[in-house]
Image 1 (cartoon, rainbow, N blue to C red):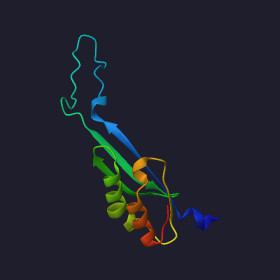
Image 2 (cartoon, rainbow, N blue to C red):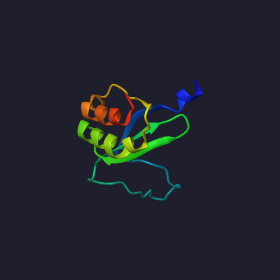
Image 3 (cartoon, helix red, strand yellow):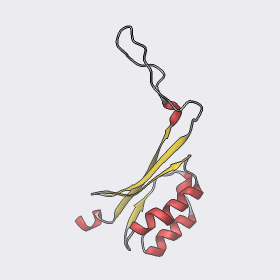
Image 4 (cartoon, helix red, strand yellow):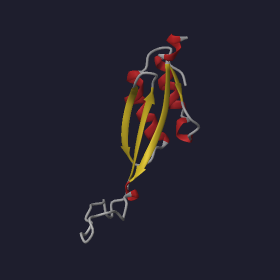
Length: 113
């Protein structure tokens, strides 16, 4: 059973919007609060990685939201080099993850999702 843990990887992503900067804050009484925010440059950044029982594999940050094309690129360039035959990759139900090309890339190594 212990050897099965080393074969599992869980893929997930999270995103951050730069327009989530706070517009209020605290300063000493009578002092003006001055801070910086990316004014006029609202973007989204996405972080994706494979969580293993003992480490984080293939971390990747992209500018923009995840889509199928970027997911396929992630699997091909970031995830595939970390996979070994017999690895099992668990994905959530995001439509971008339902890619035959990404599945074929993993299957060619001997891993499956």
